[in-house]
Length: 475
Image (tube, rainbow, N blue to C red; front, side):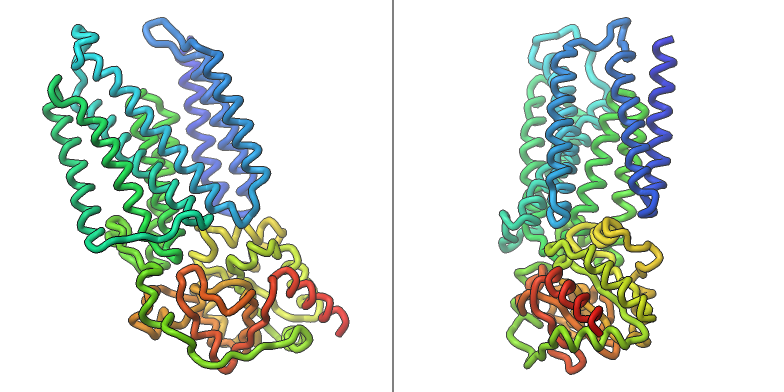
């Protein structure tokens, strides 16, 4: 009876994961979808704690179990409530790394039981099957790579870790990766009392590979990395589901792994990079930016006053706003929505152009604008936006840089060459709001800023938009 109830709990958990993921596909239902999946996880966790039995014996050490649950709940809740929207990408990366660490620890713990056989502590213990060993090693390697890579990504996103690479690093990474797989494969087929400790060498090698995999990655490619590491964590969690024959853990891991992989493919397409290049760490980065468009000033730029920008936008027929990381830094999404409503009252058609990799993680700008109650119908994707720019009177760029840089189309020496961009230069007037002329996250200069139809509106995005709103109201 207990087993059947636990099976029902797992079925409910699996269904809520699928329903929740589906609801996450639209901003209006995303919050509810997250709650639906959370309820399913709650049911699965407490069902396991109180109903799971093996050979007639249930779980014990409830003090440790609930102590860990309380501690994790408190830390997670405080972190989520205190995090700023600008810090959301590194929080996501950190949480993802914790998931990878948990998956790797499962493999370490389960191998500890196997090691007892080969060390002579439990000589009567049954030898593990090749399938069990394969699952343990896959969970270990993928989880360790996800953990180490996510921690490096977290450090790079918050500025504590800088890009680093050395000559021949790609070759070294590949050799290390395949050597790790080869040793793991050898142990799966021929593990015995003389070589079982190589397991821990594989753990160290996987951690080193995770660090070296992410270290050289340039800032413009970070959304792809976060998505890829997320898929790694999902696959590692699925391995844990296989080990424990736990259907809800398996379902959740597969969903995360599949969703992360699909998103990675879409992000690679948006960045015009092959998945092969992603897997071997062949990303454009700051190191490459020394050539091409970063090699000095492109000419003179012109500034625009708040009053001129207000007049220009008030009497336009169509305005497209391009949000970027600068908007998130300034927490200016709410005043941006106020500007949108004010312009619409004057008969201006206002839309938002969203680049797939704008911000620091996939969907960053969508989440930011949804927080300010911007209608989802106002958000247009890159392909649609590029069709509309030709008929747009004013494009207002708020803190975006690399995703509007024409060098991606015109400069073969640029590290972002070939990346699809928002072709804002086709609009009649381009107004760029930035704090300064400092290059963007990819570390390269933007030739858009020096074009005749472009005007610079310097200052904090929130302060500049507040002044714009006040000026437009006075017209």
